[in-house]
Amino acid sequence: MMQLSVRLVPVGDTTLVVALAGELDSTTSPILAAFLDPLPRSRVKHVIVAAGDLWFCDLNGLEQLAITHRAMQEKGGHLAVAEAQPALCRLIALMTEHGGTAIPLFSTMPDALAGTGVEIYEQTGPPRPVSRHLACFRRARDPRSEQHHGTRRLRPQETPITPDRQENLPPPGRWSAIVGRLRSANADLQRANDELRSANAELRHANDALTARAAELRRANDALVARTAELDEVGRITASLVHGLGDAAVVLDADMRVLIWGAGAEELWGVRAGEAVGRPLASLGTGLPVERIVPLVRDAPAGGAARAGARRVALDVVNGRGRPTRLTVELSRLRPGDDSGRGLIIAMKVPRPGDSHDR
Image 1 (spheres, one colour):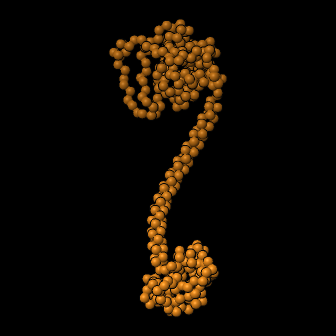
Image 2 (cartoon, one colour):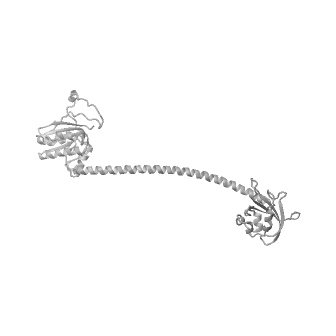
Image 3 (tube, helix red, strand yellow):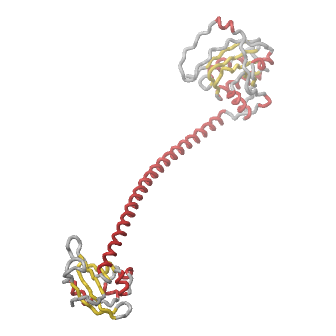
């Protein structure tokens, strides 16, 4: 609960010091109004507000002081504020800058009392309130301590504000509109901040997902690289085996399409492996009599070429250079692990003196 302490100290026939301590706002300003409203009908012409212990004041409290100041001016006097805190000084200056009532400000009590004929102001001082919204017990004043503190020491103001620098404030209604706009802008900023936090969290989740996906792709790429290396090694082994089958070796599938076209076959028939692989053997335009080979496929034994019992036949052909050549063609069926015929191995060899062949 907000607290306000008000102490009235007459210092002359027409001068009254109002010592305030605590908080002056919409809740406590009626308390101050109960003390100030009767003053225009009394002998008092000068009111000095000792605000050294007033550590909070809003526009409602300041408007109450302005009302009393205007009433004192009609009697030829004034209301002045002395020893105000910097925040209150700034509030009074803003009010005068925007067309409000110019309340005189003084940094010390002697300066404020100089125009009233009072030279010394003595006050024991009201009890100092505790921090706002906190319950407390007030300590009773000790009369013996008051004897040791006869004259209250006045504190100098950090930044004195003279009447010639005072300008005016907007009316209280405009302040309410400004505060409302500031609150609305603050709410918009909070919503935008929440949206940015949400977007940042989504981006973090997306980044985590992308990082995990990148790790999976790296692992898959490493597996593909290892598999490619294995296949390259298998290819080199296969090429070596095919080369060992004869001068020219060809591997066909069950549809007589070329699966492997050895280097010797390239040299013998003048057809590159890239042109032959995947195409039917009969469409390559080689001089090999396919029509004589096809009937022999059914009778070809299982297993690799160059084995005992493999079907071997001697053929007169024209090679890729157009020269007649006599070949020894050895046929064997290609079988995978399930022992089913899946193709044909054709090993072609140019006979040399001393070689024998079957027709």
